[in-house]
Image (cartoon, rainbow over all chains, first blue to last red; front, side):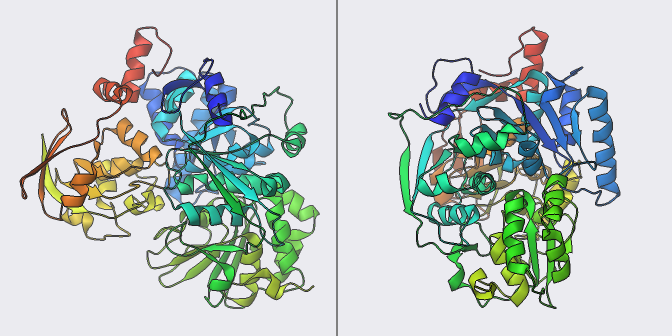
Length: 419
Length: 170
């Protein structure tokens, strides 16, 4: 069995499972956001449930329209605050909060070998930890909250093997954009994407979170990485809960194996209006932008800010650009502050905001007018995603975003960084 | 029996197209329905009549996990979606919210906007009345059919809970 099959099998109480089987899987963590928890809470109440299966395994994270975007959001969040308190759920809001897919791993709430379901499509992010994590709708999440289980169809696993050493300025974001560009937005439909190879072994945890995060943009059920020393080190300070490490059998059956040589890769850009419309940065360098966003569950972690700070240090944001920097969590914000990154951003003229999904989902904190373009480290660029249906989003890595903020157009970081 | 006019869409119709995230706090399906497909087809909400059918190509419903996507489509009055393939979270959400989905490439390839289709959900038969063609959609897996027969996942779970059966699935 592959890694994904083994985790599902263990959580379904089975010796083994076959691709395509419907199984009932026990969950280790159930999550919803301020955009999806209210429907889950409604369904929970409709089922007449008195308590969740385990309150310590249910978390509601206020991040999409948070800090309260408007009265409707405020009332929604107030209701969820009260519901969570009543049922003893984990409730993440203002104090030491963050974007769900940054927060859960950094607080040790997801561990290798776990099954995690969340009412958010980017729940697949936790696959970076060697967990099986997947997004679902609010009703599925409500059922998981009540019963501690949810049905799943066992996905086939596609193995992605990245060979070669990544050039400077090329990150996990570029690897996943490149991949989605090659296989398209339904190239991994219903599958588990298993990320392997020498380039993957070299990737930091932050870059792995970025890659797993965007597996959904290829239509995948999840993205998953093997557990190695980096994973163990990451997890070590964050949780004392015992965890199980599963590994793919050498004779496991993959649906397909896809190999890429990434040694000559440039930073990648997904141009409007699809995450699979991918180009190399050199092909799009004369496109002017109006806004830059550096943040989100995709690239709102410390390594992302390190890249952005390296580019922006001693430089200024172009006078026509709004450069919005959004730390993925309070913990990231503090670490970035201590590392001096926040000062770099502020001195450059960038705006540093509170942890939130904000502009990524077109909620608040940086919406686009008709005819405007944004270079963004987020994960989707469908029509109207960040505001006006006549605006455009270019998905990039944090270094490209920062470089673009300086020049006012899509820019390779090598163009602006002093040797 | 469903009977309505075809509204044709292409590939990768994503959830932000189906209903923009800014409407995520609206709960009334009829209100949501007014904004269905607003960003890619601003007149859709006004054009669609109760019982009409959306026909699309591949990967319908990709993107977000927001359950209001199928709810919005139903709220707009659409009775079913026929496509070559569906995104997986959208598929689950459609089952859970009672929006019938049919996978049938032949219907997609032979239907034009404005054609009248008749769909028999119990047999999965799709008839193009305008062109006098009949096709069979790919049947739901048995487990999924059971969920739908029970009235949805929540109803299925509630029935099991009242029987003292704690599991939620197969």
